[in-house]
Image 1 (cartoon, chains in turn yellow, cyan):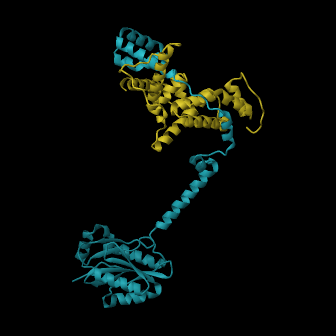
Image 2: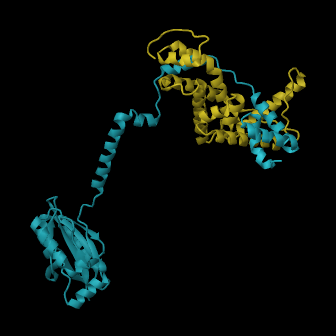
Image 3: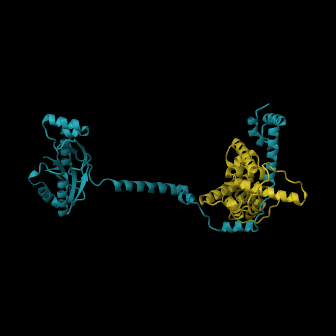
Length: 200
Length: 262
């Protein structure tokens, strides 16, 4: 991407921006970053639960994309490729911490105990008042902590499915596994999360 | 109605709308009639809604600027990249280097003296020894050929690996095993002879090494001292003696075998 052609694409597709990047358009790359930085960062954050690590992973993902943009042949959506890279880098980062005997997932606030064993997941309706807001905040904290405690493979599928709203087929491409594996892994991940919410 | 256990595994896919039509209808039919599975579906839906409602993390400011800054930094390649890429020249070069290292190690670790294989009977006084089966280092071709011929004709050698049968065959034939190219010393004690040989070798600027079994020694010493060693080591007790020059030119080897006889 030596030739610099400054453009400011607005309503062009990811595919078009990628094609321009491949022709050396630096502005197109910037547009891709701006368009997808929130998504990349949020996925990394949901997987790692640490802002610093998530920032590094998301930025490194774009650096990797920039340096290997010519290898992208458009066989999948750009976002699928981005997810693939972010998940891989997050996975590596997680293992890096694990090898050093340190878990960065403890940076969350301590989980809040539920009063009874029942799963209380009913989110309050909008404008439910201060009590409802407090309950929701408490629920979110608990759920975040429980998510953070799940095995990485479970967290990955749940984030990709329920945060990123990817289909089973898309998740299979991101994780390079079969749709059947995705299906059973999601089911087991939800069951593990449900059980931990119940019995905590 | 389907079994709950069969249905449970598909409830998650059901709420994601990822079940094939026929299976979806089957699962829904079961859930409609089963309070437990119906409750499970509700719980799963709440769980999914909760995950989806997790607040998104706010992207750090200067995100793009930091990406650009990283791009200006030299690429940090992984150890795999730095070791093997570019593949087209690094891999062949490294393969060649590996071959050279392996060859070097093999050459370095190869025994510096000719191997001695010995088949020995437990009975005192009977030992069959095979001197180098490969061309002896520094040995003249004709001498080596005559040695090999002698070895081929020696019963003890032909049956060397048979151990006791070889000894029995020799004794039955009334022959003593011929031990060419060695110095045979008779003594009261292998240890005493060994100490004597060791001291003698040192005096003659050489060294003594053992080869299995322990009554066979290899004495390395300057070629010019072989005669002195031979005469001083054996005296009147010498039966057969031989010294072979080594290719290192300045050093010779004398094989000493000790026979313990009362």
